[in-house]
Length: 333
View 1: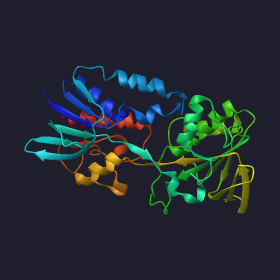
View 2: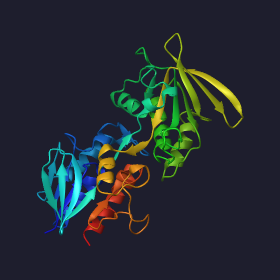
View 3: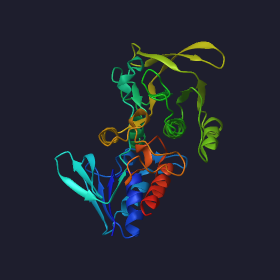
View 4: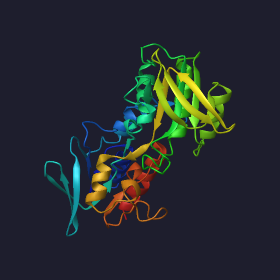
């Protein structure tokens, strides 16, 4: 019986654990937090079908009800060492665990918007992130800085992605469609609000995504402006004034809004960065590097250590689950 260690109990880790256990592997699933699926349960609805994030979390967690899967919570693995034919996982307290093979599914964190001081996050209460808005949507309490329903909401794409100043040149892949989804959700809760989305260029690269973008304009009156916001500041009445440029017409633009939503991109999680560095597996931007983008995309440079999901690059939940399936099948060889 193969002994498998999976580090990270997000959708990738859980899906892979379920498949490996169904093939008679003994699986240890490590999670540094007190619960699984933290990057799903902090959301309300999922694109492109507006299905419940909690329902998906419940379905994934049900897959852990298997005697061959041992979930070990509140345990952060900080190093992996090769020991003859085995691997030793070492947690933050120095405790050691042994496995035949290891799958890294340590996932992502969202970009810290405090690093973009010119946009005012953490300075002005009317500036929030897409994650903050997701919580408001889930609790049906979308409010501005003084606790009132906003009359105007502005979304800004590519905060911490495709940005030389932040050091992240890559696209986070899901921010464009997330803004469209959230804009529609805001419209449903605030039917009278004016809603704008500022973008560099919209990348709707998933099934149903382009259709959702068209519905946002045609059915929900979401207004899209091609341009980057260069600066945000507070007004005397606790609103947010933004400076931008409409690059389609080449004109500068000023606008006042009740709520500015920063669409924050993906970065490697702390656990991903730690293992990438300690195990010599770091790729671009400190994600875990795979051997190749096609047939070896779940293998790493160390034989017996595999990677899946957003530990190696930004991807959607659907792509993450598909990728973890591929990783599990690769590990069974």
